[in-house]
Every structure is written in structure tokens, then in C-alpha cells.
Amino acid sequence: MIHDITADFEKAICDYTGAPYCVCVDNESNALFMALTFEGVEGVRITIPSHTYPSVPCEILLAGGKVEFEPSPQVLTGEYQLKPTRVWDSALRFTADMYRAGQFQCLSFTGQWKILKTVKGGAILTDSYEAYLWFKRYRFSGRRECSYLNDNFDMIGKNFYMPHILASIGLQQITGFYNLDGTKKEMPDISLPYPDLSQFEIYQ
Image 1: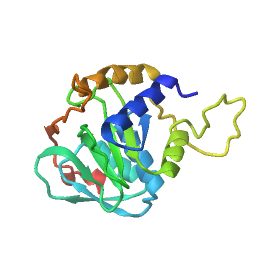
Image 2 (image 1 turned 90 degrees about the horizontal axis):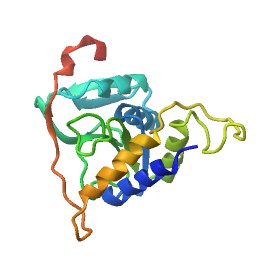
Image 3 (image 1 turned 120 degrees about the vertical axis):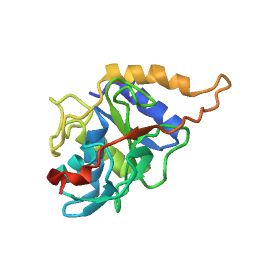
């Protein structure tokens, strides 16, 4: 079963970001894949910045979509939408009340440059209860949160869930995103340089 600490971390993320629901996973790449799969992007042309992290076009292609690059600055800041979907690459943003209603914002906690660092990990913010339930099962090999000896297997999924050890790191860190009076701190977006992926034939 999903550990209570992971559920506690998800609630803490909701409280800070303003999202009704949060589903933590092992990394943001898999969060993007899950969100795109839920959206049903088979054959859809999805536009992203030409300068971005390589896993973004990979997840679009793996979910059955087609990649279309739009010219962009080499330095990427904050978050951007994978148009025309409701999916956002929010790897470089983590701040108070950041949730956009009706959207799937995919967060990254992996690597030294992220605002909240759990060594490895990611999450999806959503206000869709239907999507929330689907994401929870999909990340857990399609299983319900019960013993596999008692489950009624009726869904194919992946092993994408966040281990409770990583969630415990996140729970410790997220307390630092509040002031002493309990108000939320506003965190600045990260800016990072990325290669121009439109030059690589593999993503076409």
C-alpha cells in the first residue's frame, strides 16, 4: 500500500500550492507521461519550446503524441503549457498558490537546481477527482491501495509511485516554505539553459 508519509506529503503540497489534489510519483518525466496518457494524446501534435529538457518530447512521443517545437530562448524560466493539452511542465516553478484551475501541472523535485529537492521525485497537481483517482492507480501498477492478495485487478498501470523515504525528505523541506507567522513564502522561478531540441531528428 502507499505509505501514509507519501499521502501526508501530497496533502502538504496541496496546502502550499492551492491544488485540490496532488499525486506524487518517482519523477516528473513519469508525471508528464501519466498526464498526457490520461488526456489521450494519440496522434495529437503538441507544441513545446524548442529549448527544453529532453524528457519532455520523449514523454510526448511515448504517450503517442507528435512533437512540434516553437522557437524559444535558450534559457527557460518557470513553467509552460504543452499546447493544446491541459498539461504543464512546471519543473522550474514551486511557489505559494501556484495551481492553475482545470490544469495538470507536473512538478519536479529531482536534482540540485529544483526549489523543493527530495533527491528524486515529482508530482501532478489537479482539481479533477476522476484524474486524481486514475493517477493514483496508474502509478501503482493499476492496483488499488490494498494488499495485492485482495485486489480485483482490472487496470494496467506502471510502477511510478514515490517511495515514502523521499516523501519524508519533502515533508521536512516544505516547512521551510512558510514564514514564522504561518504565511506562505513566495518562491522565485528557476531559470536554466537548455539545448535546442528541434535540431535533433529523433524527436521529429
